[in-house]
View 1 (cartoon, rainbow over the protein chains, first blue to last red):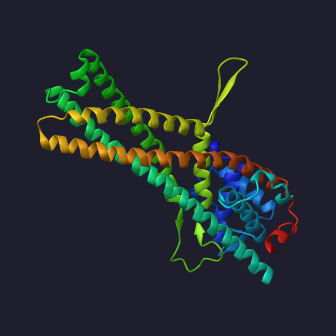
View 2: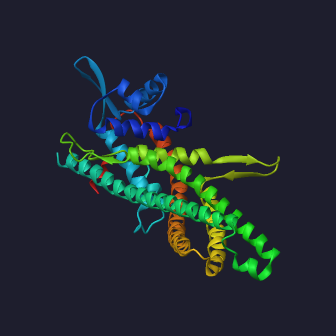
View 3: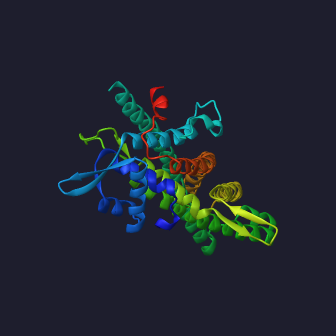
Length: 102
Length: 252
């Protein structure tokens, strides 16, 4: 799977999940996400600008960690997927306009 | 403080629920893959034995005995269809195997990790993205002419597999029940063929059941992905300010 094929939601959700439990460096994320340096920089910049991850200085090493807001966004992502696989779900998942982020 | 705890518990609950569902789906794929592999192996054994008997002339099929040349032609067609079925099952094994290997790698639970703050489960997003990559690979628009185009999706491919499995499998299994009646002089070969045939029948039925379930799952995924694209679009529209539009949902 090349990075060219991946869409925004895949990359953003993946980075948010990777940084959820442990602080991660850019190099670690680069290796795990298999993105180009420019692409990971752009992704981190985007997530930082939305306050979804925070930049921390850990022993002079810059690391990234998912913020509470990022956790909520990720939770929204999980809920969205969950709704589609909920066997006892009574409502149509397409009708959840009220659950929109903005 | 209570709010923060609620938020974290909500995230863990969402993760746990999703993890369980993805595990279930993964389990379904594994069963399907196992049934395909076992069917493939038994069918391979069966065709080797069958070809050996035909080539050495140790068996004369029921149809050949009754209808002469016509029966021989049917026997050849039947052997060809069985060979095609085996090839097709082999392709399916590669097809599902590629997906399952990646899926299994991503979906793991850290049971011994004491540092876990909120994420007890991980690999959920990589599993979904693996599925998405799989979808993208097989979703291509084909242009026949200026006026018509057709979208080849993973659902179509899975339906084709199901269709082929059902008809060719049915044809092979139904006709072989006729042939097995005739038998030959060698008792051990007879028994082996019957065992192989019954095993094939069992895994063929199992494969059909899991194929139907997989088709339903893939239809769900196909509907889900546009929603995830929407999630990304909504994320793009988020402002950098610390807003509280998630809090209401978290408190529910």
